[in-house]
Image (cartoon, rainbow, N blue to C red; front, side, top):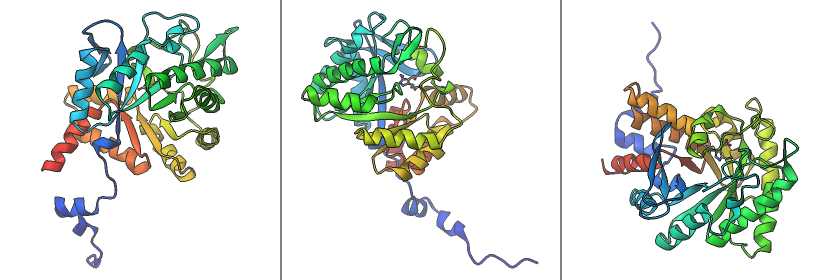
Length: 330
Ligand code: PBG
């Protein structure tokens, strides 16, 4: 007969109090960033079909109420995405002083002085072609795009954004934006770079939410190939050298190894983006009663923290913050 074990790891799992005492990973509402979609119009709260619980909100009491609810649960940061009144080839509303995102920034900064405001900086939601950069001769022109991204970032900073977040995977985007911000007197505005962003099918529901699907081709000419991890370290190093204040890896769940690798390479704060497709899968399975939504969400978010993410952008933010508060009380 085999000898009985003298080493018993189960001793450390016997009670909730013991488990809490030695838990290696903390997750709290202050680690979460809530994505928010803002749209023109009055009193609008239009649910996104593929993302139950996520709404397009008008920049009025609807936005205030939603963000107010998030703040009550302990959330301290939002990431703004805008739906323009109309799209054109250049994406003009993207850098308009009275564009929808610029309006939302101003409103939130006035109404919620302690809230951290991040903004997505990209061309895809604003242009008729739906690509993340300017299109010339049927191709996304990197260097032409840099100029536009600088203008967009400066307009967000002028409206009061704390951090601008370029998500288009253009080469040199961080340096171009840093220069544009500094030249316009916005040295205090930081950059969260979508440094490592994969060409992912997990963005499907977002493209409905932001009405940003490319009109021709796909994004594989600028977003990363899911097979590559070393390339992620190069992208992260370049953006760090260009002056990024925080780095992001996106999506999160299929790329936890990449989060860990970037964490080990860089001393910058690291953000994981728990993207729309990850959210939609959980919502759909939970609606069918096939999984326990609360348990699955908290497990996934803790996995991202364990892999090395300091903060997480997630559509589950308000629910998760509420569940974490309940855990604290129990
Ligand atoms: C814009 C952008 C995208 C997302 C964030 N910013 C979509 C894309 O690149 O196609 C995805 C977010 C999500 O899926 O939740 N470039």
